Image (cartoon, rainbow, N blue to C red; front, side, top):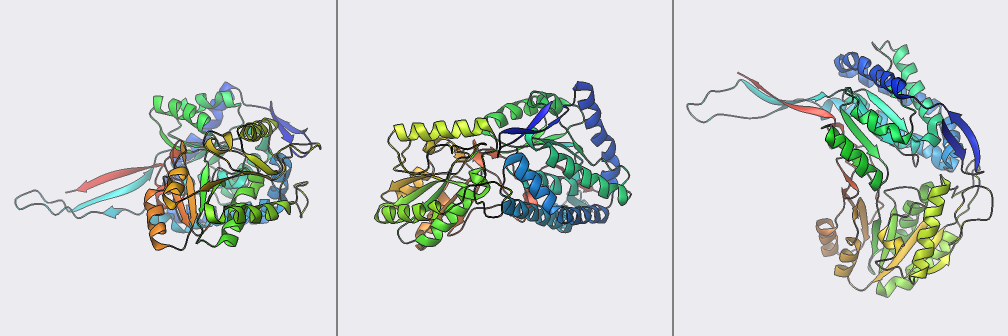
Length: 465
């Protein structure tokens, strides 16, 4: 059984039967059976189907937001925004897929005396059923940033969601299949749900019908699944952990830098791979930035995620809370100072308060590791060059940001920050129009944008004589 526990109470919310080996194969074969019809469907039919899916999401926003609050503790105001973000993604790819996947004609004018082709081009064609393994941190958004471009490319999708958000996964798949049935898609099972234990994911990857793997989650698990996919020679996109740095220089807009860093760090109760984890502050304004952070963090409301005024909900699972507490305690023991929070709240559920650690140094867990919760680590740097070096002093490379008004600093940050995304005087975030992904142990491949929709396609060279 797959057990969903309400993180606000610690009590079991629901249990779902897990597929056994034969059922797993049958479920994947459903997506394989649906692929030929979806592959041959005209682009305008795919677009109409996905626009109808967006409308269904719009109609069921409140239901999805409530499910996320119950299943993984997301504050309901943020849950509604997450559904809106998913809708934007679906509509964007419904409108842009034809542009991104259009054939690219190449001028191959031959040298004198060579055979001359009449046409030479690259066409982007779907590869078949793709397995998406998605974690529970942003269950609607992460599902649709995989589903929307992959489906619009003409692939079918097998969605393996986290055990604790199976209610959300079921609703997502049901609404897509309902739309397909209503619009007379040859086979409505263009997306199927795969409720299996984590130990069975390797078997799903090896299934002969699966042509690719998209994984969003932790770096250790991503490494294991990537090894399985590589052994079967299957296309892989990995969106993994991050320990993202936000550099605040003395000439930056300090108020705005603090606001954006906290918005990034505290959304989803700190459970976002892309969020700011480390704030690196230039020495002349170090104490000022700390005071601004402390004032704003102290005002955040921790509470029931179903309540409108809750800023911070519970951590999604007990083991995540335990890991976070160990990281905080070990960092304090190593010399970090805790100015706010630092201990789980004495109430039912898995609640952790906004926690501010300062004087954090390399070698401390709050610096070296991904902290998955509302914990912000602050480090003092003396120069811009030191800031870049400290920002890059991590095994991760998902995203980074910097606040400065100096043109040279902006240029050097873009060139030298080792990350898949860099924001200058702004907050790092995902956008359907732009590729999202990391380097180093934050993964490889890209989601979203023209690069993302082409990940699970065959870039076929065509030569017509």
